[in-house]
Image (cartoon, rainbow, N blue to C red; front, side, top):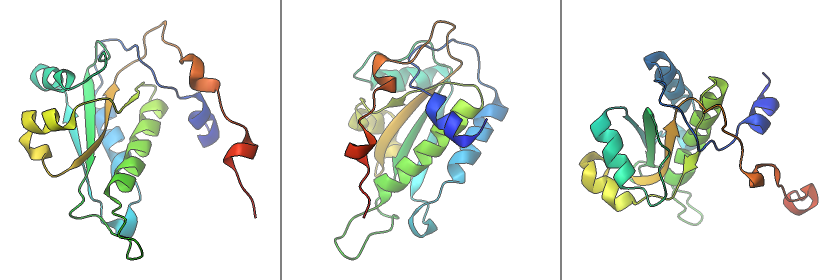
Length: 172
């Protein structure tokens, strides 16, 4: 499938099956993240892969929204402000920007593999850092619960809603 079709057809899937995600699929997803461009190629990010029942339970306990059930794998992504490029003009630290680029690569590779996910931002980063101390110092920006979409999974009503190009694009 071409890129624009992939970008338009992937959606935030909130209904997954418990069918396992293979190690080959996890590896492909991670490789997409590692291929993401970052400012000055500093690569100020970390991806945590949660597959054990214990790790998944801990991650679920840090979510403030109903967590996608069942879920065979969760990716946690964070940016490291200490190693990120900082723009001299205004001191803007690019850790979150770079992490978001990585996350977008993961999201699209997940869809390309026929898997599904949703970008979860409604979680407690402090609790995650308590549960997984090696996350301390990172700006945790997203969780991706990944699996195969349930047969009756479908996009949310807002998926196709889009403001007009006139509102979103300005040409000079």
